[in-house]
Image (cartoon, rainbow, N blue to C red; front, side, top):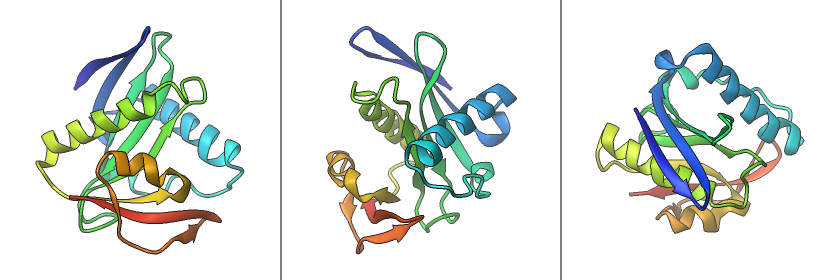
Length: 158
């Protein structure tokens, strides 16, 4: 499924696919973006390929140049949590601070509701992003904890 969102002069082309529908170029772009941000920028060596991608749908946002600038994975219920879950929510530094993260979350919520209906969504949020996720209706449901030496907090959107 493909759609468009506009932000100022930037156009984001959204693609929402199951893992098996991704082509090798899309998968490669996802892995590069996630490694650039979560491993290199955040100086956090961890195994990104955690076996959940295959059980997930993926939302990809491409800019006017055809670069992948936003991604999230929608993990099926029963994989990470009883509820569905957003994970690996990421924007490229090329668009960070320009509202693309908000567009990503809005499109992710829309696609998750089309796929699963109105179902609760549980996330493991990097704690510094709590206000961002609260904007979308997520509420803190647990104590802060360290995941790969980065403070995280469990949040739930009903």
